[in-house]
Length: 150
Image 1 (cartoon, rainbow, N blue to C red):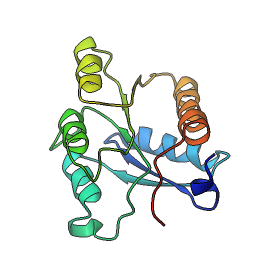
Image 2 (image 1 turned 45 degrees about the vertical axis):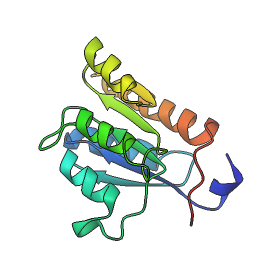
Image 3 (image 1 turned 90 degrees about the horizontal axis):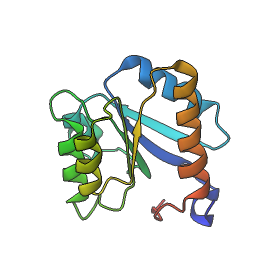
Image 4 (image 1 turned 30 degrees about the horizontal axis):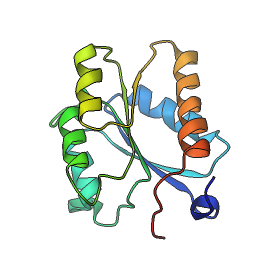
């Protein structure tokens, strides 16, 4: 892990509308080896308010990593991804697409929009846990994330 992150937690924004997936992700990350802070928003509009630090999110911490579902209410994940990657203040935040869609159009479209990773959520409970642990092991341990001011 880089020196910039040794004394501070990794801030993760989970953009997900499925309460079961939220709860499971929270539990797996809580049990993890690394100190992290998980913030959750349940639709695309909330995600953009959070990232822009608007409305109730004025004091939100800029995430180091975003886990983004595609099929969201109000504003879908495809649009949220495009907005993130077209905003100079947000563009460097890695975005992991974590969705039920395995459609090739979604895979191609999100990578064309500069997603950093595309993962199809497994429906099996134990496989879902393995996926979240793999994300934690790779993205929070091996990958050097962009430096964030304290």
